[in-house]
Amino acid sequence: MRLSILCLLTGVLAACESAPSTHSYAPGIETAATPDAFAAPPSSVSVAAPAGMVLVPGGVTQIGSAEGLDAEKPVIWARIAPFFIDASPVTVAQFRAFVQATGYKTQAETFGDGGVFSEENRGWTLVKGACWHHPQGPDAPPAPDNHPVTQVSWNDANAYAIWAKKRLPSELEWEHAARNGRNDQTLYPFGNDLVENGKPRANTWNGIFPEKNANTDGFRTTSPVGYFGKTPLGLTDMTGNVWEWCADWRMNYGDLVAGKPAPTTGDEKAMRGGSFLCEPSWCHGYRVSGRSFSTPETGLMHVGFRCVRSVQ
Image 1 (tube, rainbow, N blue to C red):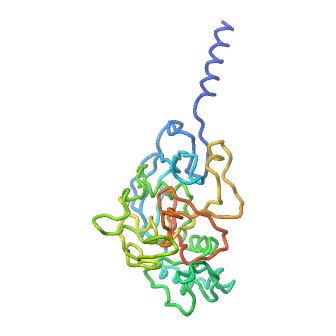
Image 2 (image 1 turned 90 degrees about the vertical axis):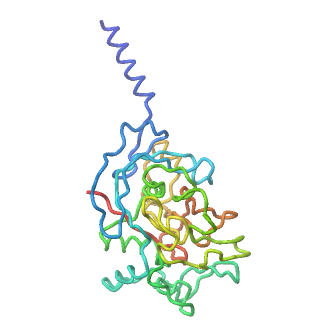
Image 3 (image 1 turned 30 degrees about the vertical axis):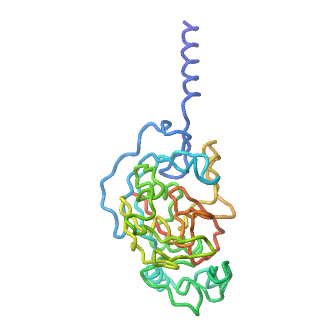
């Protein structure tokens, strides 16, 4: 009898040891090395999204790409609860409302300059006076109200999110939304082709960066949000236009697979989505799995953000 019990316990322990493990990443998010590690998908919800937001259904999603850059490897899997996400990046007009309501001063305004890329000089420079309402400097035209706000640091974006009673998305939530909440395996949220029927689907660099910008999509810098249409989930500008700040500190997917917790400090914050400066010969960052990073106080003319809200 004792031998039978011992054998039974040994079998149970062996089964437990061989079962794939999951790890908590953040509230509502678990990660694992394989999709079969999750016992069940998140419960579905049917609730109206707040104005200007879209409901992202919960699901199990591949994060990263085996064919991508080193930062996109190894591929991991995430079980993500439903959440709401802004349909478009935060616009200049929306950010102005925040500034007028709170008197907030961005870090670019405090520093007195912001990062601007010059096509003529083919490089980046700090331009005095460049800020959210004049992202290329005071001598350039002001940012149109319906374009995504730029020259906002991660700290600025987070301050706006708190004011709006929202938060910045985690990288895993952002990629889940870019995969349309159903683990689509296309290069971009809308498919594998950046141009369809002769029409561009996103605002990116056209030509060879930085030598030539053919500008075939009609925009040398930002474009109006929504100009290039929506993803199947109903989101705009998930490909190109501006990089979007995410909540996370820079982290390695391999660490998540190993069960290490998400970092709570670091030097750089994550960004997703690519921008109008991205071009595949040097930066194919507007792919669904593309990633970039920058310090949280940095303001740049091609970086903005959108917000999310948890489903209560």
